[in-house]
Length: 408
Image (cartoon, rainbow, N blue to C red; front, top):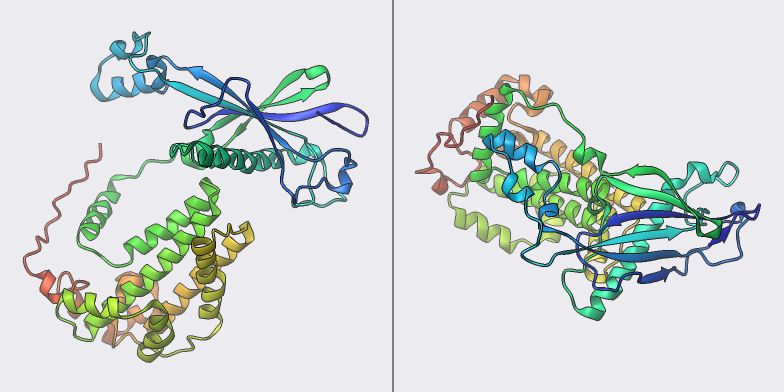
């Protein structure tokens, strides 16, 4: 327990289920702190070391409760059938247990919490307590995993906490009072407007593209994944790795298309040349030779420093990036992509495939799209069908869209 300046004892609590069973006895508790944790002087609290206390409670779960509460409604909507068979199960066929954890921490700002000391208020900084508790919980889980060698014990992120976390305050004489729940992961559970029927063709063509190795789709997906890693999961290390994966895929996809534009005829040619080209040589030598421009300028320099080197630190040394590091890395990726687009625009006569696939076949309204010479070249390229594949892969591909999207 911690005392406020007026002598009141208080701690904030957060309770939620873990996505796995933690093999510790009921009532098990663990106090965790870190060397850099210090109460900020503006909080007038310096008598104790700040800690997060985790308490664990095991619950045996009947099989009928393993289904989400709205499952019966879903089955009724799909099949018109009442789910009485599952709802009537009272005894589990297989023992199943769930671990709930209660995180408890003092509601005082640390020197590491971003805040303005002149205006800091505990009433406005409640989210800091949960943000502090999850890393502390993960430190405990890591210790348990390395002791037990249990691979199911993994670090949790904010997505694992569900949509509502029970929040409360423990006061003097061990009194606990409930507070409004913390709403999490709203962006994943919030209702969205359904797509309309005019999306059908777009869905079908993208499915076709995925089935036939259309360039840059994987790079775009990893760019989106980095956003999910950062905003939804709070996994900053994965965000950096996903960003760098997207960057390298984007650049190598560009190179493969440029090789086709230069006359490569077979998939083996493309694969052999790509594998023979180291990434550093691709960015440092081949692209400057083929595309011109300043490949030692701000955009590429920022990529090496803010993204590539941070990825190496994360992968090779396990360095966890800070939030600002991920922001800088994301900006570096976007600036690199913009620079690459500019160089392809400047070389549109030589590398139309790379340009059309990266910017979109209509070039998204770029001035080039209105030039008759480009439109004529574009028409020639599109007439080849699967123009993004090596010529020897295009023969025999069924161009019909075999997947069908049905809107109600």
